[in-house]
Each structure stands twice: as C-alpha cells, then as structure tokens.
Amino acid sequence: MMINDVTYKVRGAIYSVINELGPGLLESVYEAALKVELEALGLKVELQVPVHVLYKGTDLGLGFRLDLLVEDMLIIELKSVESIQNVHLKQLLTYLKLTGKPVGLLVNFNTSDINANIKRLVNGKIDNI
Picture 1 (tube, rainbow, N blue to C red):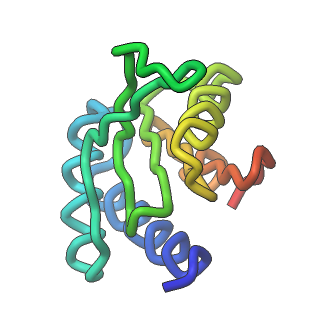
Picture 2: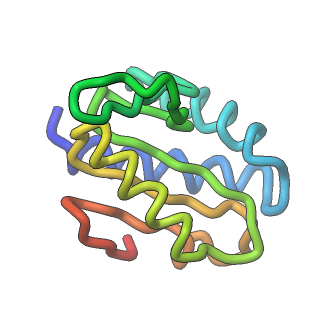
C-alpha cells in the first residue's frame, strides 16, 4: 500500500473518531479509538512503539514511544491540547529522524476544527491536510 493511501484512510478514521467522541478527552482515549477505526479498515496498527536513541552506535538506554505506527510507515502523534505548538512539531520531526519513517501526522483532538489540527510532516516539511 502506498503512503498516500494510508494517510487517506487515517484521515477518514480521525474524522470518525472526532465525530463520535467529540473534542477534549484524554489522548489515550483517542489513541485507543483510532486504533479500533484503523484496524477496522484493515490497517496494521501498533501502539506505544518504543524508539531507541543511538549515539555514535551506542544505545543510550533512553527512548521515546510513538503513539501509533501504521503499516510500519506512518507515525501518528496524538495531542489533546489547547493548540499545537512548535515543540509538538519538533517532537514528531525527531521521531521521523530517529526511526527513518517517511511520514508523520500530528493530530490535536482538543478542537472544534479538526481540519486545522492535522499536520502532515514529510521529510521535514509541515503541511495542513
């Protein structure tokens, strides 16, 4: 499956979740609901995927966790905050760099306008979708 096909399906699932649950819940609720939607679409989804930090070939024993990894190619970072900040974008950019994955979506569910709160990062480029 091509990355654009995956992101198209993910976007539809995001709309389903926000329409069903509304804004303002905890990130963990949206994470679980989005996993259900994506799996119903036949997509492979992993939650809380560990990301190790390597420095000059040495595992630092520190790491992060991706909220969702879809089809082993798309990182989804979920937020439920007042507004998306630069630090959130930088976080996803770092995850893309550490994992080598091609595309990431940053989604803020604490909004009445979900369209303005989905950011797509491709090779360091940030777009609204």
